[in-house]
Image (tube, rainbow, N blue to C red; front, side, top):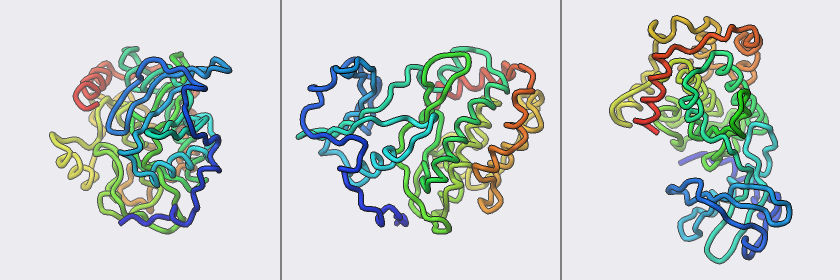
Length: 308
């Protein structure tokens, strides 16, 4: 069982940013589908009064764990950071719940990188600084995401200097300092070994960020396998390398930060604040516009097609 500090917090729907009952179509006009999955569907919508474009996650009541859903909305209501998806409203009718959030027109991070065909270490540093900044903010507010991965990182819009948004806080939890969580939560490539061992804290997010950074710089994950079971076995071992073919042009500072984030023992792993203070972030503006190797770019395209 998970240790649930959230149980100590009374989640009252009236405390949400804007909780409404009744038909959402009185206020929004629905457009095209933006995606669907086991969680439900996401539709584009236009706010009738302001004309603003927003994303609406539609969740069937009959398929929801309401306590978990209300916790997600409660958490999102408390997070206000430029790199975290902003939630506007929460609707509740006879059949569905609706989470209304900002619309990120830039799409998923790895899709954009693959489409560009070129990518620099400086760009990687800019993106990772935003991700870690959001993680640092959430940890400061005693919230752990627990499922950080490229699919949950969107671009606000397509641009040469993109602003990223972390989405999907459905697995997030409030945590109490020095009290361990035990419920396994996450995605095989990005899950931390201590999560698989069922005793962990907020530093599981740092491990996930380290995996994302590793992939950004070489195009494939540090822990791999043919099946999810094989991948998690590799994660549990925690051994990784920097093969020269892709990593020879990557800076020492970048590799050092990856190593600090993928330190096996969470007691010795960097915190989000330590990551932000690392020389790679302090000096990334000084980096030359050295392109990530074409081999790495090809690796990323193959990884994205096979695994996403």
